[in-house]
Image (cartoon, rainbow, N blue to C red; front, side, top):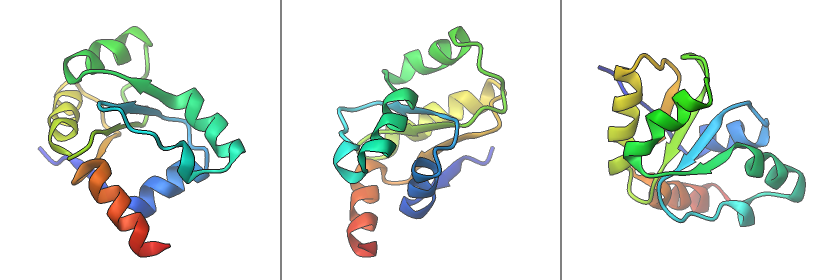
Length: 113
């Protein structure tokens, strides 16, 4: 099964474009300093904090359609990859994670600024 990965450019476009999605944070990650106030309001509406084993039930409880965009982020990309694998096995077709996690995202962001 192919797992969908994104980098900083795609991540930033999703957030800045205020794309409807669910952003699942598996670790204590603060993205607010990266964005302006309006974009932070969008973040507040799409972010949920969860543990990997609780993500699928959380999404099912919200009755999100299988095509709804879900982005899973952790510090190193390991648990988020396995969480996306679980989502894809459950039929979700628009689930993504950042390869290398928040650490890679921050490094790539630094290179692009």
